Image (cartoon, rainbow, N blue to C red; front, side, top):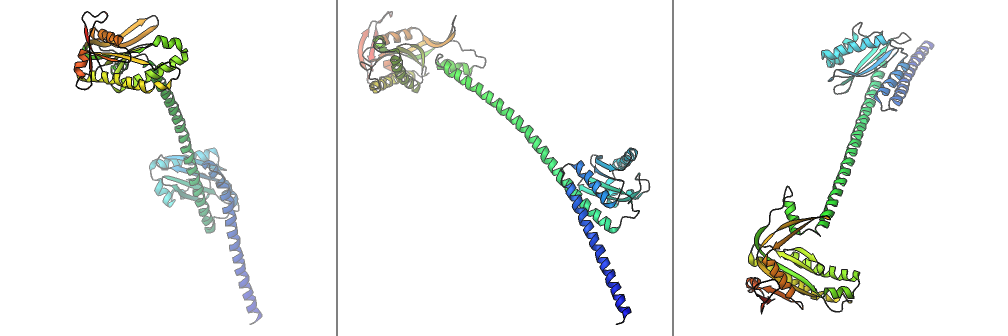
Length: 428
């Protein structure tokens, strides 16, 4: 091999090395540009900042003095974002108007597809070196326009390949920004809903507190208003109470024997404790048999049994009396301070009476009562006063109703105070 051949081989190798070096330099430039641009656009989640950073970095890397970048929403026929560098205000306005006209014509998709319109002379208000239309999301498109290079050289295929890669990264950055914007909007909506929910919860707490107060009021009122009156008020839409009416009823009067002596022997607190315990037993028995306490005194009760069935109300009254007597005997050992167990005397009468609610007004306020008026009540009260030593006494009317259900003892006829005729009495 002669020197000439060696020289030719060396030239070919050098040319190949130069080509490799050029390609290597190109790739290094591409990578550096891609890194610089990506670093800038991915450092923000604001679409406007991403577009401006992208345009500045791209123009700087390609040595361009003029350029713009815009995003368009086709369905709304509006330009959503527009950034430019090196363009006069008049040029920007002209370019926006031309893009707006295309949007109004409704052929933006096809225009973006082949880029034909961008190649028309006079469409851009500056000497266009490169342009690229791209899609961000369905219905959202963008246009990148760059002016001529300062080195007065055209954009090569390598440049276009790099710019296409950069725009792909731009699209990803914009999608990320939009995703973050959606999250922010969702968070804002969530915060608004949380505020509304908190307000609703506060309103609910206020409403529940009102209900609690009303329930407390109702509970306190129930101590002073018979349960029958409470039910009538609840059923009446306008608060009106039905008028009194005559009906069959059984009336029970209960009295604690020797109450005055008990009060004298025990201190007030101890008396209250004893009476509350016994009255709790009374109330349990009364409620269990559908009775309704209508009158209370320090040592006694008046109870109505309003079952529409004559036998029913009489049975309920007698069962209540016997249960009270049984429970009073059971709890007698709870109070060691008592000189002897309390003696509970009871009297029961049955028959027709005028039954209903009545409201009494006084300077201290209003008070509802529900009671039975007439001879039946008067006789029941007198029978209760006649009872002693823990007896349960019944009138003949009541006894006749329940004699098949209880063992009764006839005590004879008695003259009762303020009752004209003698009354036959039975003991249960």
